[in-house]
Image (cartoon, rainbow, N blue to C red; front, top):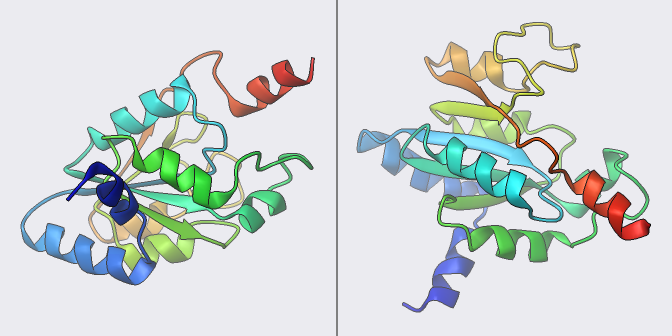
Amino acid sequence: MNLWDKLQLKVVSKELAATLISAWKEAGEKVVFTNGCFDILHRGHVTYLAKAASCGDHLVLGLNTDASVKRQGKGEERPINDETSRALVLAGLESIDLIVLFDDDTPLDIINELEPNVLVKGADYDAQESDASSKKYIVGSKEVKSRGGEVFTIALEEGFSTTSIVSKLKK
């Protein structure tokens, strides 16, 4: 199988992801889940995803669809890159095993469906926050912990964000 085929095989349906994750877990492998828009891939994203992958054996990325990104209010121009392009660029990263698009405002349903062992978010969130109304609360953390899983945060790379890149481009 050539590299192009391998990249395309990383972007899967929720159903296929659930099947693969179940097999990995039955083999005793730890599955890590994170999510986001990853609109313009930059150093901060690559660092974060590599560190997230290091929390287990397989990294599954829940990628917001274009409609989901629009509803987050990140700006009229966002997403810059469409969901298919974002998924393909991310599939090129060695740290990511699977990419699953989700259209909801939060990743709660996909987390419940995939049942990862580990949930990871950036350190702008708090793994210990239990108040679901707090901006620091990690959606899905209660559910992952209730199944015996772990929730971690990863320090963000200072000075790297899609918002700052878009701002620089506008100047």
